[in-house]
Image (cartoon, rainbow, N blue to C red; front, top):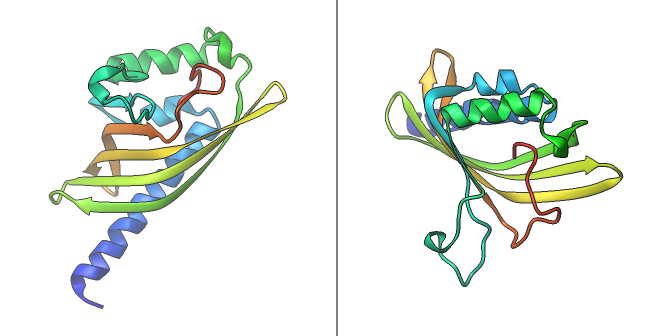
Length: 165
């Protein structure tokens, strides 16, 4: 195995561990800890639903948060002021097909596929898509500077997203 291949495998393993930890924090509603994964100035977006007749210029993002708005969203969810998540849904995320490319020694672009199972008031819904990240290496881990979610469905079964994908 070449040194480049070994570095790529090592980087992917690091990114997988980071993404699994992120999924665990979200599933367990440890949103304060999840927010600590973000660099100040980071952005978090959920792109418009995929409609083959529209481009992204023709519809609004479902979520387009800067760091301040993301922090506010976390506080609202944890304070119980978001009716759609009071009490919290039961969530379980599956993360797969992780890919990572080093942009520089300190910056990594990563992406993964995901499926979120949500159980709320006797109803189970699933959300499927891809998440893309721009990560900044900090010590032996990473900080998120950009997190972009693309859902692979053409509608939201409950009409809204009250939890963090």
